[in-house]
Amino acid sequence: MKRAYVGAVRALRRLLAVSGLLGLLDRAAARSRMALWVRSWFAIYDLDEMLAVGLPWWTFAAVDEVERHLAATPRARVLEWGSGASTVWLAARAAEVVAIEHDPAWADAMRPHLPDNATVRTVASVPSAHPAVGSRKPGFERQDFTAYVAAADDVPGEFDLVVVDGRAREACLAAALPRLAPGGMVVFDNVDRRRYRDAIAQHAAVEVLWTRGRTPSLPYPTRTALLRLQEGPAG
Image (cartoon, rainbow, N blue to C red; front, top):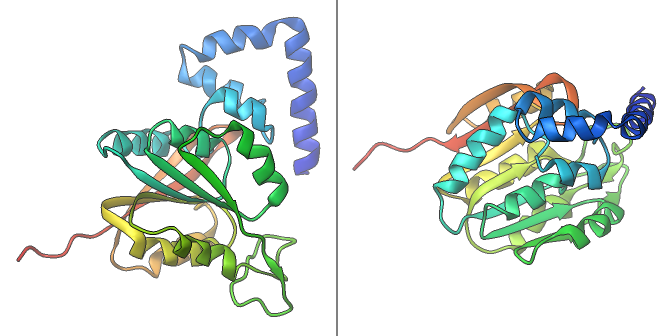
């Protein structure tokens, strides 16, 4: 179903380009967020197109909150599980971005687009009949992501923002929270999925902003959660 949808969207994009309507939509997208959202539909699963749109694949509400957070955090450091258009967008707003990627081919495609303050580290999963750190995404059930999650340990220091948007997200969240700088934020995407909401609920010491609404590249609303550690009592 996904493959058929993406194929249909790309065919429509070619038709719009030939007719000149895609250019009109591009100009409208520069003035209107609604038009920008519609334009982003035609960028789905196309790295060059998504980079041209210039948005992460989170809800627009989450994008706005993260942009405010980074604007208020000079020299922000960002860690990201899962790379993509968000990596480039973050690098334009932070001092340093380190992305951990499980797919070597995707990482190779990303690197030519990255500015000097962003890096992608490839940490592939390992085949295993009984993964210690698994993923429930179809096709990855017999892959162990222990090294992928632990790769954050190779990056010293605290982070002002951590993005959990790759594989083994429940384990990544548990690894992310202790690495947050004071006032830091975690972006946890696709929390429409119950297992992700359950993973968040296991961490009692977090405050969660649940966002739901329009999301770049998708013609239907989704949800992105923004997490902060609760501050302890003063004194």
